[in-house]
Image (cartoon, rainbow, N blue to C red):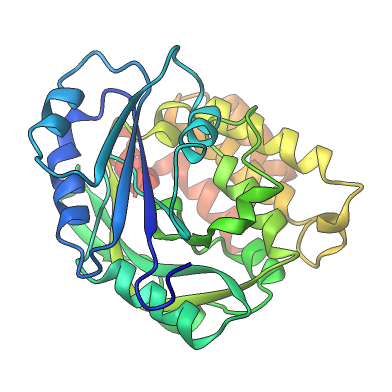
Length: 299
């Protein structure tokens, strides 16, 4: 590792991501830290993604086309094999960064040699509501060994994370997952690694009608159930808050039923939810017009 100027590998997995791609790539090129490579993994796109990428004349951008289309976290693992940097970041094609994102994260690694992962606060951009919202109050963002905190409030997203490369020497993403691969990886790594945080929002996470987690709510819920059930006998299950995670999955199911106008199943699920203000809120969903409810839930 070049101590004064470490190389950062940025992985951008793309499947028909042309709509916002130019802004995402520009946010990489504009980084104040210049020693980076962009590993662009084209997962068999059929739109103008490659054409847009090749319009950027920069030797640090490296194009790779998949031999076959795969689910997302297999594609991320394939892209990881192409990296040569000391640190690893991921940037989705619909997200973008502030120009000092990499620089500020690297400073955290310089300050504390024991940390393995640095994440940042971020903004949520809601395309439908045309609103920008800071994801969380900076005081709520934990550092150190944060597994229990993550169960209470999962405060990060893949485009905010920077990893030491050596984390991926012995482990990679679970290739069964299309939606929750980073969630699974981060929770398991949090048992072993110390985290640091940049409290400023340095990432813009875009919410729109093509987000995978919104398009594939059913798959998202199914993957979370697999994850929860399979971890019942390992170290994660011993962390305070693990058992309550099943109610977070139930919340996703309830909102899915409302969006599908499946009010019978929504009512059955609400009845199994613990008594709380949130349970009252779910009952109030029955009195909100579905068009308004969609906006509220998606935000």
